[in-house]
Amino acid sequence: MSSPTDPKHIVVIGAGITGLTSAYRLLKNASTSDYSGPAITVTVVEANPTVGGKIRTSPFGGISAVDEGPDAYLARVPHAVALARELQLGDDITNPTAGHAAVMHKKLHPIPEGLMLGVPTGVMSLARSDLMTWRGKIRAGLEPILPSSGDHKDSIGNLIRQRFGKQVQQLLVDPLVGSIYATDTNNFSLAMVPQLAALATGRSVLLTARKQMKNAPKSTAPIFETPRSGLATLTRTLNDAIVALNGQILTSTSVQSISRSGKGYIVDIAGETSSSLHADSVIIASPARTSAPLLKSLSEDAAILMSSAEHSSVVMATIKTVETDLPKLAGLSGYLVAKPDQDRVTAASFGSNKWAHWKPSDGSMILRVSLGRDGAPTHDLIHEWEDERIVRQVIDEVSRHTQTTITPDVFRVTRWPDAFPQYRPGHMKYVDAVESFLLHNAPGVFLAGASWRGIGIPACVAQAEKTAQCTTEFLSHLQD
Ligand SMILES: Cc1cc2nc3c(=O)[nH]c(=O)nc-3n(C[C@H](O)[C@H](O)[C@H](O)COP(=O)(O)OP(=O)(O)OC[C@H]3O[C@@H](n4cnc5c(N)ncnc54)[C@H](O)[C@@H]3O)c2cc1C
Image 1 (cartoon, rainbow, N blue to C red):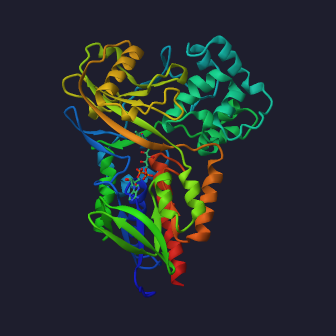
Image 2 (image 1 turned 120 degrees about the horizontal axis):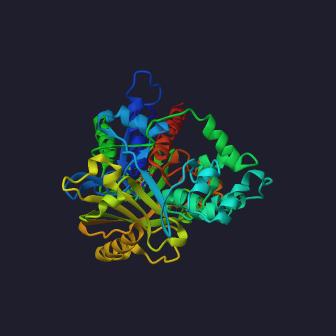
Image 3 (image 1 turned 60 degrees about the horizontal axis):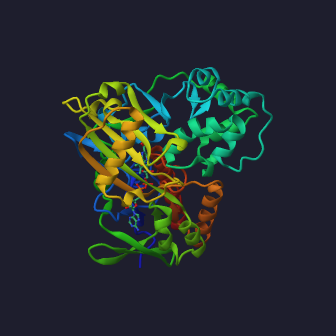
């Protein structure tokens, strides 16, 4: 039996960026002189043998660190940038080299200038590009004079088609936004992409976007950043900081169930052996659907809702190509494949053009190619294909798209099953419903991470910081 003066114990489920940041922030805050909350201990439980979740870096093709999942985070929002500086990673941080990206539609087209997440802020750059037909350009150009749109039902696709027509939706917004979420933007919540949702507040989306672009402070600061030693440096450094602050991290250990015990919880875990942890508060930083069964005895309603969460699976093929006509691709950072042109490849990133530290000394090039997305017409579980078949597919498609002959010297295939949570229209109502069930039936159990309020690394860090604060407030009340 714990006494009211014992330190409060928090169990964090999952050691991805969200779980690690939550644990670090709780311990770091509690170590400062102005902390007024209760004494705490923190245990992070991670099913995999290593920490990081979707963040994974390993040597490849003679380069010491090439990411297998995310390779950078947005630098124009504060959360991840501030965390990396706090963890003293500033000297290791780098930015992409200048380069342009393209959309693959029949051939590669440079992405027109003056877009906000694919939304045009003017018509001249669209008119100059041969990506769209004249009919599509004229339809897009009518947007500023159209009356207010009807209900877009929280679908990005609906809004953009209503305002600009099918071509802007299919050839600009869907490739640019859909590739971030491995999604079909027709079936994706507008509210969950706040930058786009903000453009739908006035009558004309184009005029609102133009005003926003004009009023935004002019910045030459890079849009993305990453540690040269790979993104896993961020999660490894968090791991070390947690241990230095006397937190505990149990890897190769999975949470099996959570049940009520007085005002707290019993968390059953299975690793080398099975055991139980007492917790005063639990942070669930593992994906919604796989975490649903853990909550069954606490809130059947929350568990049912969470088990309905949908995800898409992707495969990342990394290739070192020895091709000699690579100079044709100079300056191209990568391309996105528009849905009408998609077979299996959805995007390709020319890693050695994008990152100075990924340039092999022999003049070859490192490519990262993504396959698979939500709602793909050829939905045949690419992550179940053998490596050789995946690489053959990549060579065939990328050679065709770029009109070069891709000859792999070394390749690596990373499978990411169910990696991208799909925020369906109405997602925020779903989040509110799950949280309200937990508030009533399992106070002190919190949800954070990619399944809920944003999948990018900065959004996960922001959720972790907020959750750490809510946990401390909850435990302070428990003490009263
Ligand atoms: C291929 C790819 C490319 C991406 N590119 C970018 C990018 O360039 N920039 C960007 O910002 N974002 C990118 N993302 C998105 C971003 O990486 C993820 O959304 C984010 O890392 C998710 O972090 P998380 O902590 O919420 O979840 P996760 O990283 O999924 O961590 C959850 C952890 O919980 C563990 N777990 C699950 N169940 C249990 C259990 N029962 N017990 C114990 N542990 C459990 C899992 O093993 C996992 O380690 C990309 C994602 C992928 C897959």
